[in-house]
Amino acid sequence: MGFIKEFKDFVMRGNVIDLAVGVIIGGAFNRIVSSLIEDVITPLLLKPVLEAANVNTLQAYSWHGAKLGMFLSSVITFVLTAFVLFLIIKGMNAAAKKKAAETPVVALEPTITEKLLMEIRDSLKK
Image 1 (cartoon, helix red, strand yellow):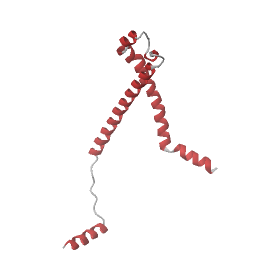
Image 2 (tube, one colour):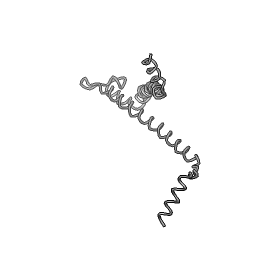
Image 3 (cartoon, one colour):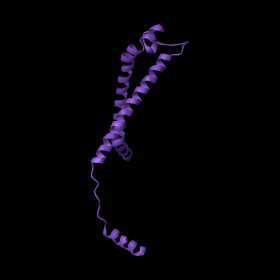
Image 4 (cartoon, rainbow, N blue to C red):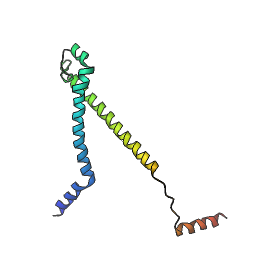
């Protein structure tokens, strides 16, 4: 029974749940970026290049058997994903700094022990 309880405690920890949510959202975000590349960027920006290579999609482009189109699509997906994540994290950091700046700093009154230590220090200096 201890093993099952330990496993349940492990799974119910906040870190595991947060990680699972992040993986699911990341998968959905990957599909959005892939669609952006395949359905928007490729037809609008790369159409002349693809027509010159006599291919319909970026993924179909190959050179001497090497699937360069698949590689280029993966590189573009990675760069766009990294850029969007950079923007999200930069925004979160800016919001955290703003919140930290708005939080007032409360000066704590020294404890009795600290006051006595300060008196001893001052006496030793004299």
